[in-house]
Length: 163
Picture 1 (cartoon, helix red, strand yellow):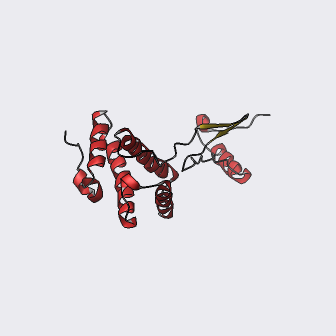
Picture 2 (cartoon, helix red, strand yellow):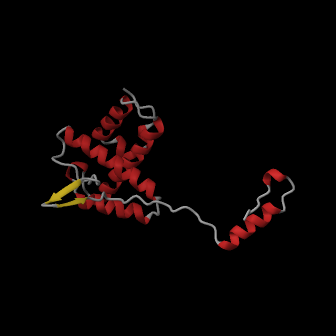
Picture 3 (cartoon, rainbow, N blue to C red):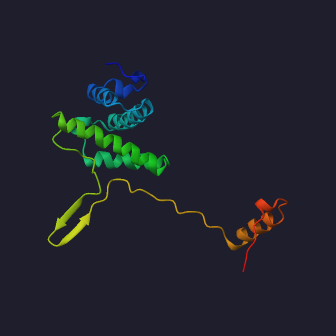
């Protein structure tokens, strides 16, 4: 089955039979073309990184994944993009483990519970999800908002503070 997007625009990906087979399988599962393209960019990025290190996917380690993540961080990618790239790589390695190409997945899942006697620890994945706090206006900004709405002509858009 031919992929719905052009795999040949990814140089390292086009040369990896495992990566092409994994993306074909993902397409058969009904993933959207944009999702497939995002996965392809992630795998291409990792394969390109490995090529510069002189390693292969079959022999890469957690240290390789860590160096790749640090390289991605140096590019100032958004936190969500980092998580997406690592997730795609984890899914790809799970495929390689299922196919018998690798003995184990070097990308940590995170969120797993480990038990040490009576102590339970939740493990962290390679990238922590950052949550943006809501914007809270300062007192001066509230005053400016209230004064601008108090000057409004229509009663509907007028704001009053009742005691």
